[in-house]
Image (cartoon, rainbow, N blue to C red; front, side):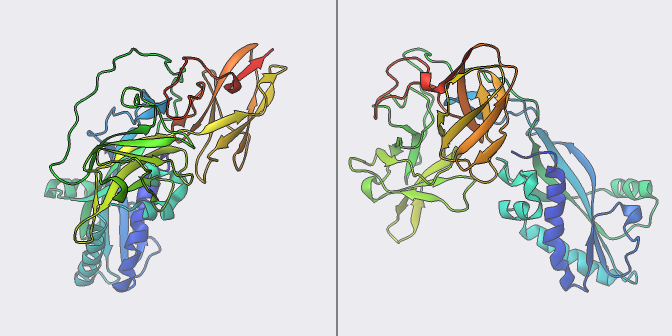
Length: 404
């Protein structure tokens, strides 16, 4: 979800955090190359200089999972980077003791913020989208050898100042290359093998979460939709005394739901909260412990797919505007994408849950329509009866557009 502004977002976040060094002699925080650091700066100074961006070996060629009708699809891997910084302290009168005080304060701040909080990154540069990436950004001190330090300062032909080196990782920049978007597979066989399961020795543990499909939910992989009943399977889930907790990166606070009648220690049933936006969320179970402290289970991912309706399913010509109504409506920061057949179309306007998409150069034919929000697509299948798996393997005519 992050873009090419992610590098600047990390640097801006560090600058905002280090603004607290003003408590040590009123130091000015700058972001300049080493040879330009003192230009037009007279007082105490703390300079944050990113001297290298290298590939992150742990995330190289790793794909971020996306949803295609409940199943994962392959995407272009993000650009994974490690950012290398020099944090340099300079005193007004070249007083090394003052410079050491400034650097010590800065290193203490960065030590206390070894993991950059999502709110800190969002406040620094929200449009970068870095606060929404799956991996957290971590700051780690780096021990540079005398040879490395000498080479760096020699390159800039300037006098050495007391310096600490840091590394920020992982910074993931999403690819702008659109991935293929084929339609979902309607049937994939009767007996899908189940993977291995693991449960903790004590405490609640969940090994499955999905929509209520009449007992077929463990064999069929589907996202949940507004109005669906969610089933959680596992061990020691607490039954009626448990709380099911949903978390979304688009919401500041979790959304809690109470189990429905008929829930047990091995299976919980809840209605999907209406406040949960479309996209990827996580689900966990929280039980009050004997001492009053909550006892939380592991978290499992859950794809929440929007439900759409089309303004018209018959269009006259090759150029027209298609109006799509989405439930839930897109929230702030979400960028709706229309999948028209296998074409991806950006919206012309978004007004609450009503989204207008311009289409041009459309050949005659019947096109299946899907709406993608935060990587999760609406389901173009005929809706099943409540608590039942899809009865027929067919696309819903109400989610198809006929162009004549």
